[in-house]
Image (cartoon, rainbow, N blue to C red; front, side, top):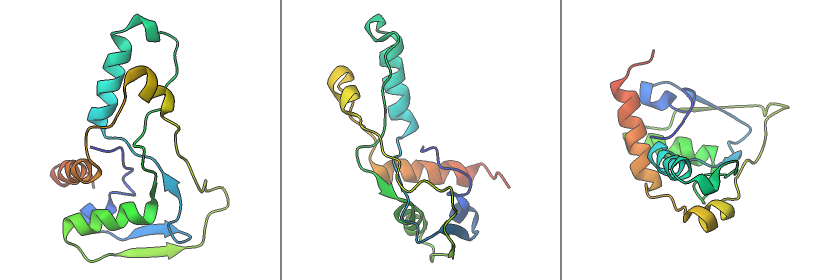
Length: 129
């Protein structure tokens, strides 16, 4: 499961998705199971006390691609509304995971599409609105 906002999950509920600009904003995602695996490794090893690690999938994704992937996996026609870019929107957020790779042997195990399917299943089975 990914930590997609309810906004990003709107296609699962058959609703329109609003994208600002052309959806070119870049984000990293990481499956919850991959996150928990690393956190447990850190908790169980006192060497890592007070260390800070950035965790993310090594492949940054454009929000337009994330939303299109959700529509595709659900077999739905894209239902996207484009609005003017918001002034304070951050265009690119992506994590340098080199330290986590070197010190923790971190490598995400859950593929993008497997994790996204889990997310779709979760939201589909937990009607939130």
